[in-house]
Structures are given as structure tokens and as C-alpha cells.
Length: 241
Image 1: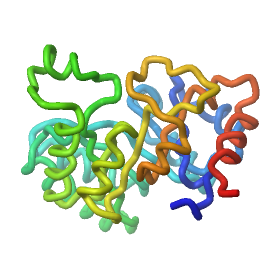
Image 2: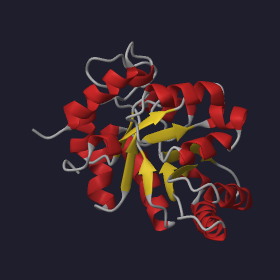
Image 3: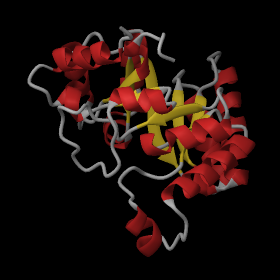
């Protein structure tokens, strides 16, 4: 992992309200190779932003976090597979049947469109959830790491490619799920950036060392005075010396 181009490991969220704002941000940070399209932007702009990114030869993390009954999950993932995106998120607590249906449908949708199948990535525990929220709000009597591991193992058994997890769970999931399981970690902040609303954060270097394949890093880059310089600074920090 340490030998990979750091720019390939960093996913930058397009957390903006519309396609025009997204295009400006993409132009402002041309070195970024991998962009995340989430709910706000996709709902406002539709798939046109995905076409824009494909036209610019960018990789795409479609982060819509599908969570529904199996038939609905399958329909959504079949449609997502047609866009030629690289990663698609689904919620692991949707259950085995829904995860299996989503995986099969994503592969079918991509094949019908002549695209490579996306990697389905299961959300284990949102990084805004802490132990108190898990126990008192969600009534789940497990440690965060134990619950994240159970959700990752369920997703692996369903045939998915990886999971989203806090970097604090990355080492455990890497050890238990093996070297081929993709780990996508939000909640990553350089030590010179504010943590924001993420509860369980880790520096980029520490997250990679813990086993993360991809780091989702937003505001330290996109809200920096010089976004391109901030992105390059993180890449430099991840470059082996």
C-alpha cells in the first residue's frame, strides 16, 4: 500500500449543492483523481455530474448509501452499475438478502451498459456515531469495533468488495477480512486540520498504516485557502521517504 501513488488513495468529496459548484471545485484541484458524489449533489444534479467526471477521466465514488428492501436495493444498484462508477455504497444493516441482491444487480447493470462492474462498499457504522449513540440511540449493545466487524463480515459473506469504516476499525477489519477486502475510511484529518463533526478521526498516514485502501478527505482540502496546495501537502505526507 505504501508504494501506491498517494493521489490514487485520496477521495475528495464534492460536497457542494449543484453541478456548477462541483465543476468549479474540480477545476480548482486538477490533481485530484478520485471524487465522491454524495446525496446532496446527486439529488440536485442527477447523473450529469457523473458524465462530467467520466469525461474528465476521473474515478467516481457514488456515495448514496442505499438501504432498503432487497428489490429496491437491486433496482438502485442496477441503475448505478450503468454509470461506470468505481465504488457504490450500501448500508450493511440492510441484511444479507438485500446485499446479495444489490451485488448481483450492480454487476448486471454494468454488463448491460458495457461497463466494468462497480465495487459495492458496505457502510458499517457512520463516523458520526459514537459508543453512546450506538448504545442509547440505536440500542445496539456492542462495542463500535465489534459491530463494525460484524457488519463487514456480513457484507463479505454477501459477496461485496469492501466496507466503509472509521480508520480506528481499519486494523481489525484488515486482519479479519483479509488483504483483498477494500477499506474506505472517512474520518481522516491531517493533524493541521480541524476535526469538524467527525467523532473518530485519524491522520492520513496513520489510517494507511492501519490498513485503509482509500481515504475520504474533504474540508481540509476543499475549504483550505489554497485547495490544490492542501491536497498536495497530504500527498507529500503520504509519500514514502
